Amino acid sequence: MKLFHNANIITINTKIPAAKAMAIDDNGTILEVGEEEIIDKYPTSEKIDLQGKTIMPAFNDAHIHVWKVGHLKTFMLDLRGCKSIAEMQQKIKEFADKNPNNDWILARGINEFVLEDKRLPTKEDLDIVLPNKPIWLIRTCAHIGIANSKAIEISGVNEHTEEPFGGEIRKNAEGKISGIFTETALGLITKNMPQINDFQYEKMILAAQETFLELGITSVTDPGVTPDILEVYKKMDSEGKLKIKINLFPLRIPDGATQPLPLPELYESDFLRIKTVKFFADGGLSSQTAAMDIPYLGTDYKGVLRLDFDIFYKAAYESCAKGFSVATHAIGHQAMDLVVDVYEKLFQDFPNISNRIEHVGFISERNLERMKRCNMKAVMQPIFIYELGENYRNSIEESLFETLFPFKLSLENGIITALSTDGPVVKEYNPWVGIQTAIDRKDAQGFQIGTKEVLTLHQAIEGYTLGGAKADEQSHLKGSLEAGKQADFIVLNENPLQTGNVSSIKNLQTFVNGKMEFSRF
Image (cartoon, rainbow, N blue to C red; front, side, top):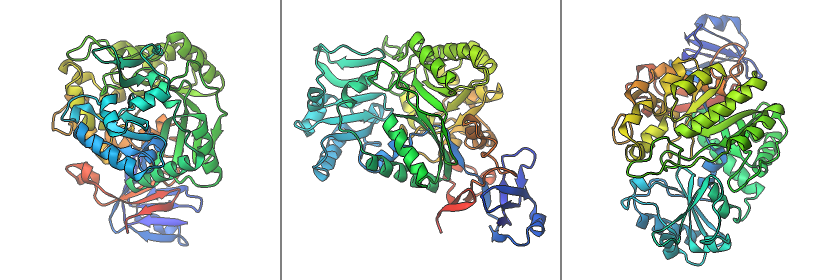
């Protein structure tokens, strides 16, 4: 038994919002949270004096691609932050030289809006670097990929290849393949890559896990895994290798597939939960593939709707009938309409299942009413505004800014609203940067996007803690510090309630079930 005392405890519990001491049993469950006097009730406990430091619930990132974060830390070239195509080419060459045994060169992170060139690279840009080895470059959003000529040749793609529903094989002015593939068309290339083995997946997951623990993230949702990755997670769980709690979403219709994958078995343990499946309704706003009602600036293009209603509804119904809930990526207006239409129909037969919408770019009044009535949940990413704000300002009409990613509208209308990062779509996984963005809505250049949708500091912190737990349907176990819940908490170097800009806050220690899993000391 442990008793943490002489602390400033932010509980995220409205009944006892602040406290000084917390008692935890040997199983990592909170026995009591209160004032210093509770010390006398636990005379045999190990007492830890926090010397006035602030502790609060650990973060629950409700949407972050765990193994993909780890991939960039292990076997894949990270191009996030590249400022030009020339810099990208140099980094690819250096990476290829250091990894001569790689059959394919894989990289991720290009954002054309921050490149000096102000365009996506093409196959010709990649051919200059490596004409005889396949290269696959994923845009930071993962909704666009660029292949060099060798990768296209290996994949058997040519000017006559039919575009899959919900995807594009983009052509240049001469009608030739540019090397740029979007949405479901990514599968035309990715299905031909060498399979990642179990050892590599495990190494990726472990690398990401250490990063999250350092940031104070003890619970995550990995939203979209294929059957091979799912089995790796289950094996790691059985071997006790998971230190963070993972809510796993198997994909139903992966890129390049026309039919749903088989449903896995429902699964739940202390550290792994598989009870929700994932769909994609459209693309990304920063990549201009989200399915909008209004064309992107300077174009007549409105993005890509990836799902047909009938196929989507049938696969979602089958999932709910087997006890799964559904989570669907939806950003643009058309995608939101489609997802809410399907969820409303599902609600008629499965009123006890609460389905999630990931990202929620825009909510119309009609969709807001239906989301409330049919108990839908919203999972959003404030960090998008900070890191991708320049993209948005160059992609959509300014009139849309006030309704973009409506955190406040969702929350104040009683919709369960969780905040998250969606790494590695973004480079910054630190929840405090996301929290600061939620309360000021400023991008990295200082422009404010959506003044009406700012949150209070308390709302933003709750979105990353209790909100995430509610979205995961685990709020009875975590998300706040109160008796009966798991002792997942962090120790901070500053009190966020007394800090001007919370993005500078550092995590000092991370505890999972009362056990310290990270410390800076």
